[in-house]
Length: 74
Image (cartoon, rainbow, N blue to C red):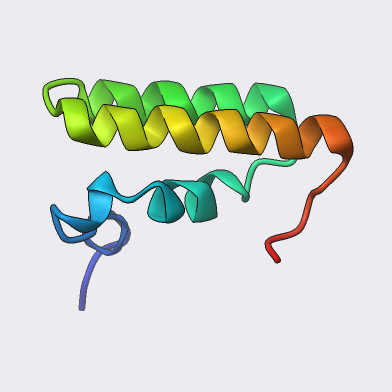
């Protein structure tokens, strides 16, 4: 049986995709929750610049969605 932590880990190439991170960040319904999720992701992948780029782009998009009131994953 796979643990929760094992399920959160995607293939290395997938982590470079903004869409993967955006899907995770859409679970955040408030800015505060999004900030915590992003900080955790950055702490976990701080040595991989391409992953950090994807995290940043997904964070920016989710912030815009929260500002405009988009809460659900479309």
